[in-house]
Structures are given as C-alpha cells and as structure tokens.
Image (cartoon, rainbow, N blue to C red; front, side, top):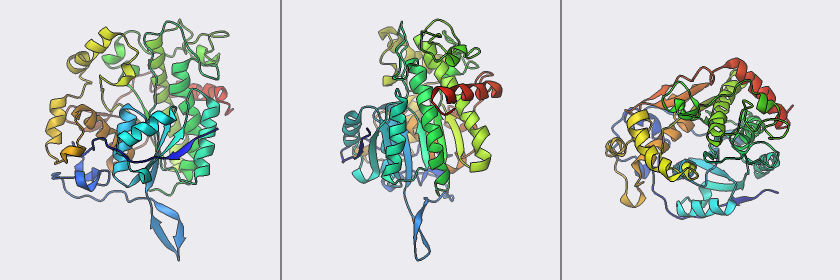
Length: 399
C-alpha cells in the first residue's frame, strides 16, 4: 500500500541568495522575508503554472508541484524546506521512512499547506509503482521531479540486494529512479507549468575526468555484462562490469548510470515534449550523512581532502561572503553556510530560468557561477547510454 499525508508545522533555517550574478533569477524562488538587500536588477522570470481549471475562461495561477526523493534528510530536506518556504511550490517528499520524514518536516518548520509526504522505497519496484499510483490519486499535477535519494556503502564487503534481487546501490540509485522517471514522464508531459524539469543528481566521483573521479576504486561500467545478468550475485556478478564486488565502486557506477540516463532522457524526449532533463553536482557537503557508513578515518580526512585537493568543498568563508549580501532574520538563518550555498545551487537547477537548458550536467566554480560541465568519456557515451537504457527497461519491467 502507499501512504499519503499532509504535514504540520515546525522550524529549520531558511535560504537566501548567495549569488549576485544569479540574484535576478532567484527572486521567485525565495521567501519575500529573505530577499533582503540583494543587489541585482529585476529581470522577468517564469511565472507560476496555470491551473487546468478555468472559471469563465480565466486561467488561474497555481503553485508548482515538485517531487523530491530522499527528502527526509540532508540536501533533499534542505531543498524541500527552501522550496516550500517560498509558498510558490508544493513539495511532495518521497521518502522510505514516512515517520522520519514527517518528524523532519515538522522540525524544519514547513507549513502544512506547502508539503505532503508519500511513502517511496526505491529498493522495491512495487513501491515505486504504488507511489506513482498514489501520486496520481492525489489529483496533483507534476511540474518538476528531482531524483535525489542515494545510498552509499563503501565499507561493505558483501553485496546486499533490493526486493527485486538487484545489488542495492545500483538498484536504489539507478533502477528505482529509472522506473520512477519513466512512469512519471507522462505526468510531466501533461503539466501546464511553464518550465517542466526532470533532474537527476550526479556526482564528481563518477566522472573520471576529475581528480576526485580518479580516486580508487574508479567508476567503470565495462560492457554492462553484470547489469545484463540482473546484478543478482548468482547468475551474474553483483557489479555492473561483471567484476568483484566493491561497495564504493558500486555507488560510483550508479552515478555514471544516473548521468547516462539523464542524457538518454534528453535524447529521447526533450525535442517532442519540451521537458528539461538535467543533472548536477552542486558541490560537496563533506560532512553529510551520505558518508555515515564510511570508516572514521575517511570521515576525518575527507573534508580537508575535498577542500584543499579536489576543490570540491564549498568553503564556509566563501559562502559567508555571499550570504553577507542578504539580510536574513536570525531566527530563520541556516547556520551551515556551506549547506546553504549548495542548496541554493540545487534550487537554481529546479527553477532558475537561466538554467533551463536540457541535456546539461551543471556545476559551479569558486565564484558560484554555474557552467556546463564536461562529462567523462564514459559518462557521455551515447552508445552506452542507449544500451544501459535498454537493459534497464527489461530489469524494471518496462520492456
């Protein structure tokens, strides 16, 4: 079965513009109380969606509706909170742990009229189908889908498996989202919102043309023989390339799959539907719970490694300088300015008019200017993307 619940209120700090060069595009994203003294010119931005129902021929403005997977913690929760707080979005928090999500929403101070919680376990394809059915039963349109949830088990010596028998990291991070995106594509097509988007979170670790992407074990899908065999560890390897199991590599491989899937979605559907398909690497919150299963030494050394070696870490000083341009009420400020910067980038890809180009992997430089990042040779391989799509279709029951 599925759970659908309208949440209640509580308190988590708010977000505001940290990027002066993007400020003109973000005024529609942020609560009016947080706009402060942003020094940017006013520029026209995309209007809210128009309701299908019209009274006496008049179109009615409505909130945008965004589904975010993995919205009960970390970046997903912070982004859900920030979007809900604008009062221009209704956020559907798609989460495995329903009670945890409700508690998180209450603690975040999200007004009950601006969010809903629905149960979604990406480790079960049946749960994905039930979620889609439940979402449609709710009667809400879908304007933006954000595939954010991920699991990372770098110290695992043996694979664990989803309810459908696939290795867990790829099953959740790729296959669960693959089915979800394909099923909800029909809902996105029906939306009357001005800018419909499907966003899949990427990772620098899956991009082998970067320093971080060359840290062993390196990502690599090989000829996809393991995936073709179902990743069940019995009839085939639990690894996509058919090799020996490695928990860290399984995660990195799943991120290549995410980026290839985004490009194949763009190739197949953008021209006919106008939907924007993008991926992004917003920066590294090196202290995020994503690394909770890593060894203590890694958790100690990873933040300075990201800060001084890969430059993927978003410094708090840099974030603070941007934050200083905006006056935010103390009782509603995000204390972790690094997280604030990354959440703002996340919101840009969701709703900023200047980041509406499809088929792009977005990144940001040290000055917080967004740019179209270059994917690695494998992560941009069109032939492999098509083969990955065809195998994935079979594994999730779409072909």
